[in-house]
Length: 148
Image 1: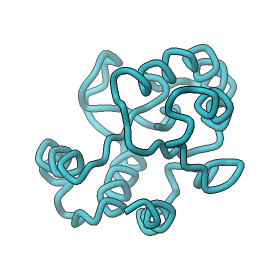
Image 2 (image 1 turned 180 degrees about the vertical axis):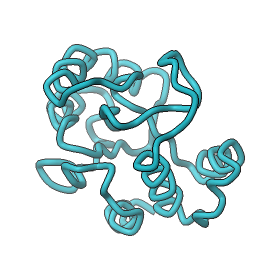
Image 3 (image 1 turned 120 degrees about the vertical axis):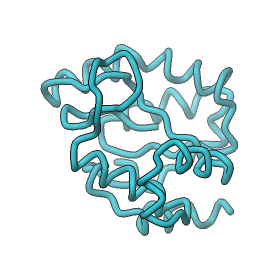
Image 4 (image 1 turned 45 degrees about the vertical axis):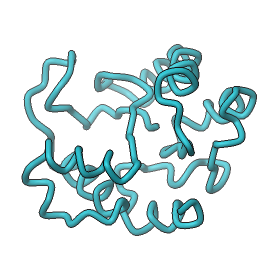
């Protein structure tokens, strides 16, 4: 799970944006690489997402729409935290939960106390990297390697 920053937009959803910006496209490619999916698979996003899920991965944002400032992002993540935890517990039912980005570190104590606390993977106190959009697929894959 990760928060959605101001520069990310989605091609599907209620946020009103139609396409991904270059930084978000790169993040999508890095997530595919973390799941050992070839970067060129991003050309067919729907097929790439199906393969991502077929391999047992699911990526969810803590909030649904882009925000204007880091402060607003932190506020929205904090406001959505109980919903995010409940959704993970009762809808997603993951085998493992990996938080990506500094903004979601506030979710760590809530998830640890939840029914899925034993499935929480925390690479370090700040998640995998504070600047999640700059995180490479190789680094995420290395953090997840011990789970396979």
